[in-house]
Length: 184
Image (cartoon, rainbow, N blue to C red):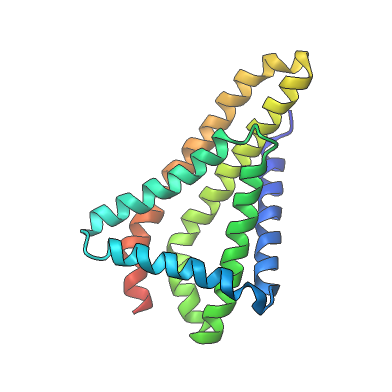
């Protein structure tokens, strides 16, 4: 069984590859980004009249759901965790370039860093657990002797998944209460 540290390094690499891709993407991706921005605006319009506690709960549950889905679907060739890491990195890179061009680096940092110091490691830890578990399931399907390692692997990775979920709680609170104050 590969050590969790290696799964973390792989997850960081995939996220950074997505970040680099997003930062270097050409203007061709602007239509994709426009669609995402429109969806985010609709979501913001829906959330804005709600109490802050409801917004924080929504953000927390959305992020937890994303990490849990990645873990649950990881046995399918680890496609969801890989896509989650690369696409989240790519979207962050793409948005970062646009925000720095339109506003400033300080504005970007104020909007991302406060909650990002919890949310990004939570994403990486959660998806590293998903990659580890998904690989263990796939190996257990093709190698009978690996099946006895599946339950210990699940227990091991469930701890990291729980850590990721716990880290998403302060991220949601900060994103709801602190980030809006900093970007005003």
